[in-house]
Length: 163
Image (cartoon, rainbow, N blue to C red; front, side):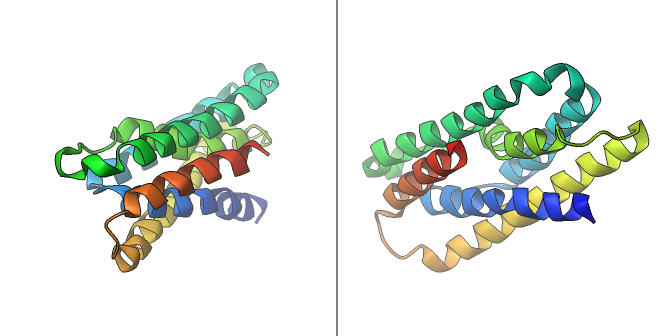
């Protein structure tokens, strides 16, 4: 039950990220796959070597925050160039969404088999919330300047996660 509660609470950021990314630009299936793969991989790494890297948890938390702020600033600065805009790197989206799950996994001490189950659970919750955020953004895409709003959301999410 603790694992499900942790997965749910950590995945709420994935909803906001899915919403913000989808407001700013077209998010493809590749982005969703990267969210799953990177969340699963980062959780596995932290679960298996958590004891060794637990002293660096602040670094991982700050890295995730900084990635969201950078992506937000990118959206704010580039919102007038929408016609020629490329999609945000899917790997960067996956890493920024999955880092918070990996930090949460530092608090678990589990046998190997359970570690894979926890990593899988975290990844599934993150993908579900990321997709829910994408679907919610479809209802909000009415203004031309939504990528600016997307950038503001991402910067605010990064600052919120920092504190």
